[in-house]
Image 1 (spheres, one colour):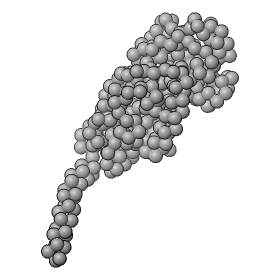
Image 2 (image 1 turned 180 degrees about the vertical axis):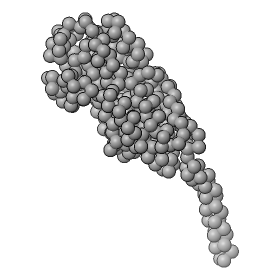
Image 3 (image 1 turned 90 degrees about the vertical axis):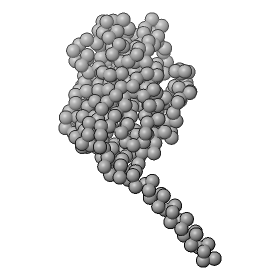
Image 4 (image 1 turned 135 degrees about the vertical axis):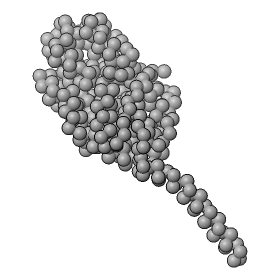
Length: 331
């Protein structure tokens, strides 16, 4: 019996040592993190609205992380290619995802995703919420939002609405707009926001819905006609634009929130360091100033894993119903 007890004790001791041997390198890696640059994957083209947010945030986070944060654009398939890249990346904290509301809509738009949205990611926190603007070519006949709504409803079959591709923020806003007013337009998807905006400036398409981070400059330069914003309140950087909610589309609200994720299994210590750096970045004066200029709302108080996780779950359900009703799928 004594021999048996000794054998059991020896086995337990060996198991504990083996476990400690596995944990020690992980803990040491977490304590020294980061020792090299961190890659922030943006699943959209360079120069687009999400890219603008990411590059400003990467610079702000660099100061507290003590390492460069390299933005890498991995576009395609409505952001799902870049998102899949992060899902399959090592969970060592050196690859993170900066994605927007499309993270919640992808499961409905793409029925054969190569990743599990609910289980392959570790949320770090929310970053910013970007209002959308309803804009049209510079010579569009309507003079204000009331005239715009009347005109597009009466001429729906003749009008074209641009977007940056299926699953993009502009596509989602367009779906919600058409669903709300009960009209359908010819939707023209582009490979990114830049070519869509170029054709709007060139009067090749009629109108689009896009983020203030991409439209504010064109609006202030008078190169497009701006009719309204999609937020519940007016945007300080565009004070003359009414909300769609105040313009007859009761409760219409589309905000393009952005979040930061790491691959599932990233250690709590590394997640905590990323969250602390995110919060420091959101508080950075230069970052806050840049976001204010572009009409974005910095979500300092929601830069937590719990806040991002809760929003993803609610938005996945909300947009899943909208997409199902529209019958629009990307595959």
